[in-house]
Amino acid sequence: MDLQTMSLIAVGLTFLVYIAIAIWSRAGSTEEFYVAGGGIHPVANGMATAADWMSAASFISMAGLIAFLGYTGGAYLMGWTGGYVLMALLLAPYLRKFGKFTVPEFIGDRFYSTTARAVAVICLLMISLTYVIGQMRGVGIAFSNILNLPITLGLLVGMVIVAIYAVMGGMKGITYTQIAQYVIMIFAYTVPAIFISIEITGVALPQLGLGSTLAGSDTYLLEALDRTMTEIGFGSYTDRPGMGTYNMFLLTLSLMIGTAGLPHVIVRFFTVPKISDARKSAGYALIFIALLYTVAPAVAAMAIYNMTTTIQTGPVGEETANLPFDERPAWMDRWESTGLLAFEDKNGDGRIQYYNDANPEMAAEAEGYGWAGNELVEFDRDIMVLANPEIAQLPNWVAALVAAGGIAAALSTAAGLLLAISSSVSHDLLKGIFMPTISPKAELMAARISMLVAICIAGYLGLNPPGFAAQVVALAFGLAASSLFPVLMMGIFSKRINKEGAIAGMLVGLITTMVYIFLYKGWFFIPGTAPLSEPDGWILGINPSGFGVIGAILNFATAYIVSGMTKPTPVEIQELVENVRVPRAQV
Image (cartoon, rainbow, N blue to C red):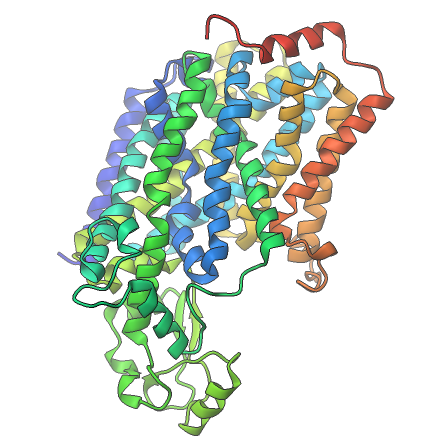
C-alpha cells in the first residue's frame, strides 16, 4: 500500500477515536466543561498534560532544533522540562487548593479586583492566540506535506475535528482525547527512532544508540557525523558555535518560567480530585514527557546522519560522491514539492553539490571544479522528524504513524489553548465581569460559542500567519514568563502585593516584552516596517527569545514598588493567602 493511502487510513482511524471519545464524554455542566468535573486521576491527568504540552513544536521541530543548533538546542529540552519542576513545586498544588476554574479567576480574587482579572485575561489571550497560530498552521502543514492535500483543506479538516471534540466535550472531552493523542504521539515518535537506531548502531534504545558505534564498525555515531559534517564544510556536529552561555542561560530560564506560567497547562491541575494529586500529576507528566524528550537528541543526530550520507558530496572534487539530481531519492522529490527542501543546479552539471560559504578555502576549491556555490538552497528543519522514516527507508506504515503523531501533537495543544481562550471569555469576562447573574446553562452555551469563534480566528491566522509567525512560540513563552508567572508567584507567596502592584506589574512585563520582541523580529501589523538589526542591535546583547526573563524581573520590581506606594493588602486577603499557602490536613 502506498504512503498516502496508508497515512490517510492511519489519520482517519485516529480521528474516529477522537470523535467517539467526544460523544462519550460530552460535558453537561460548566464544571465538566472547564475542569472536567475535577475527577481526573493523576496518572491520566499527567498523560493528558504531557499531550497538552507536547505540541507540534515538540513533536516536529524539537529534533530539527537540536540538529541545527547543536548543544544550544539543549536549552529547549532543559527549559521546557524544567518548567514542570517549577510548576509542580511552586504553583500547581496552591492553585488547586484555591479551587477556581481559571488563572484569571484566581488573580481577580487574590488581588480583589475585576481590573486585575481583566488584565490577566488580556495576557492569557495574547499568550494563547500567539501560541495557537503555530499549532493550527502545524495541522495544515502536516496534512499538506504528509497526506498531499492542499494546506487550506488540511487546516479546515483539523478545525472541524477540534470543534467536534473540544466544543462538545470541553475539558472533559479534551482530557480523554489527549490521553489517546499521547499514546499515538509516543508510539509515532519512538517506534521509528528504535528502528533507525537498530539500523545505524545495532542498539534498540535510541538514547543509548546516540553514544554507540556504527553497526559493524568501531567508529562512534557522533564521530562519523562530525567527520561527515566537516567534510562538507558545515563544521563539527558536536562542537558548533551556539548563542553563547549568557543567552543560553536567559533562554533556558525564560522557557522554564514561561512553561510554569502557561495558562492552558496550569488549568490542567484544576481537574484532579485533591490538592496532592496536582503535584502528582506534574510528576507523572514529567515522566511521560521524558519518554519523548530523551529520544529527541538521538532522533536529531540519526536523522541528520542519514540525510547527509544520502546527499553527501564527500571531499571537494570527487564527482563520484556527488548525488546525480535525476537519481535523488523519492523523499527528496516529495519534499521539494512542499518548498521545504530545495536544490538549485547552479553550474548545470546535473549533480547536487554543496559547501559552506563560510569556508573560503573550500569555496575557492569548489569553484575550481566548476561549482557555482551552495546548491542546497532550502532545508527546513521541520522536515527532520517527518521525513526521517522515508530517509531511513522504513516501511510505509511507520511513516503513516509519524503522520498521525504529528497531527495529534498539533491538535492536542490547539485544543488546550482554545479551551483556555474560551474559558477566559465566557467565565472571566462574561460571568466574572459583564454578566455576573448569567445562568450556568447560558454560560455553558457562551463557552461553546466562544470556542467556535476562537477556532475560526485560530484557523484564519493559521491560513494567513503574520510575518512574525515563525517566532510565535518564543513570543508565547516570553509573554507567559513576563506577565502571568510573576503575578501567580507573588499572589501565592507574598501578602504584601496589592491590586495596584499586580496590575502595574503585569502591564509592564507584558508591554516591555512585546515591544522588545517586535522591535527585533518585526512589527508585522505595521506595513513597511522591518526588524532592527540583530544581533548587534540587541540591548545588552539579549536575544529576544530570552527576554521573558527581563520582563519577569521588571514585573516583580514594578509590583513591589507600586505596592509599597499604595494601600496595603486588606486583612482578609492576607488571611486568604495564608490559607492557600499553608498545608492543611485534608490534601
